[in-house]
Amino acid sequence: MTAPTLYSPVDISDLTFSNRIAMAPMTRARSGPDRIPNSLMAEYYAQRSSAGLLISEATTISEMANGWVESPGIYTDAMTEGWKPVVNSVHAKGSRFFLQLWHMGRASHSSFHHGQPSVAPSAIKMEAEYIHTPAGKQAHEVPRALETSEIPGIVEEYRKAAERAKQAGFDGVEIHGANGYLIDQFLQSKTNHRTDAYGDAVENRYRFLQEIVDAVLTVWPADRVAVRISPNGAFNDMGSADFREQFSYVAHQLDAYGLAFLHVVDGLGFGFHNLGEAMTLKEFRNCFHGPLMGNCGYTRESAELAIASGDADMIAFGRPFISNPDLVERFQNNWPLAPESSYTDWYSPVGATGYTDFPAYSGS
Image 1 (tube, rainbow, N blue to C red):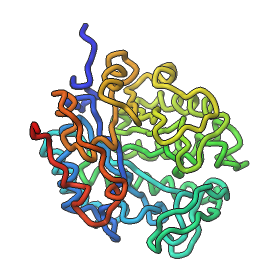
Image 2 (tube, rainbow, N blue to C red):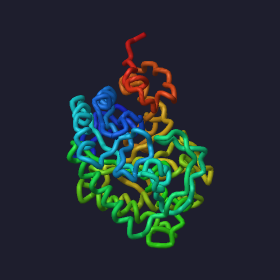
Image 3 (cartoon, rainbow, N blue to C red):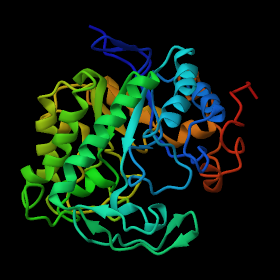
Image 4 (cartoon, rainbow, N blue to C red):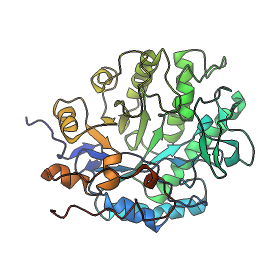
């Protein structure tokens, strides 16, 4: 039997992805202050729809979940309607589209919440120089620890957001449990010092994610739901001494659901916490037997090797897709990649500049 390649199709239940390249979720801050997806976003995603799967930029599930200037939401009727033409633009190109569900937790700021502090599992301030807010750069603040009685309400916000994603026409949803945002804050002992049912043990720190998955599965079948985790990451001041025990347990528990895929940020491009040997896709194969997606820092060559060796079923690329809307074609035809765009363009509010103005390869 011929080994799969990066460019061969893959079936996940009743969905067929035309290749094994995914566009990773990337915040691009083009939704405007109302956080409603727009026609410029539809053009951006359509340009990159040769990927077998597109995962939307992180999309907030509630007003309290916000914490990034002009990122999109999925918690009002207007937002839901705004996503519909974006989804249609991707489907018109024959690709699949998952919406990533996001709550920033302590990685936010009170200026996003009418002066109310951000929420987190524990009142532990993020050690970072500053955060970009609607009022400019500001210092990080100590978040408010969630009361146990408040947690079911946030779980319900995830369920409602999943429902709206279905109404907007997405093919599935990805639960963002990575990169130091709220779910990751619950998972990790560095940021979760709770002594109730949601902390103080590996099993308890997983409980919040488990309840979210269970809630989302009342809306979507398991094979249309994915989870993203980042066991090696230091981004947003993360990294726990017991990371290997925690994330092995998480993967083992998620394995029982039959999810669409487990999306592991296994690369070290966002920083490595250096608290032990980095967890690899091969290691996750021992505790998660469904489709596995790798992400962060992959090249064409390392992605091809991960697929051919069986370590991954799909590989997600982020930054290369910014300046190479035709990344799949460039990889497949061995065409050169365009230079990486400027960091200032990634989150620019000026519209098309650094967003939809990158040309496809022309042979010169």
